[in-house]
Image 1 (cartoon, rainbow, N blue to C red):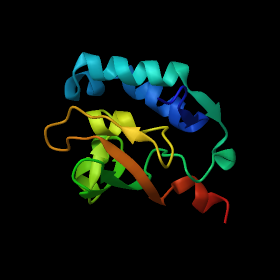
Image 2: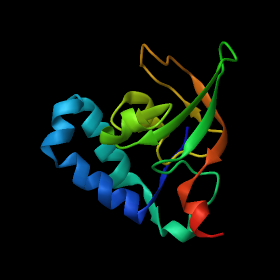
Image 3: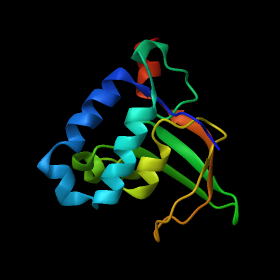
Image 4: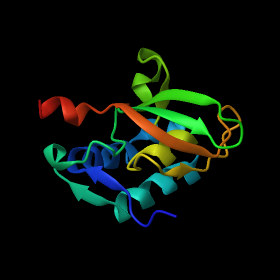
Length: 135
């Protein structure tokens, strides 16, 4: 099991603000907010231009493979207000979104979600916004 997730400083700051908002408490159960808060507190923080391209950041699009069924899922980890705007958008406040953020290609994601039961392996990051800044 992974010891520490990696977050950009910008993601940590914005997610921290989200967790303290009334909006977050209105869309996610308290245990999900607590899980994300723990991740943020324990995560390694790096500058956006220093994050490796195999780490899931906010607005990253990932290819997941279910280790039981070999089913594939492509999703983009987004803020709750952007879920409806992005095809395959999954909120960072949903179980799968919370589990994905800060993980790396190859990591195994356990998820209790009925709509996306796992376990899922992160097969590939199809898009990571921080990589666009370094081009």
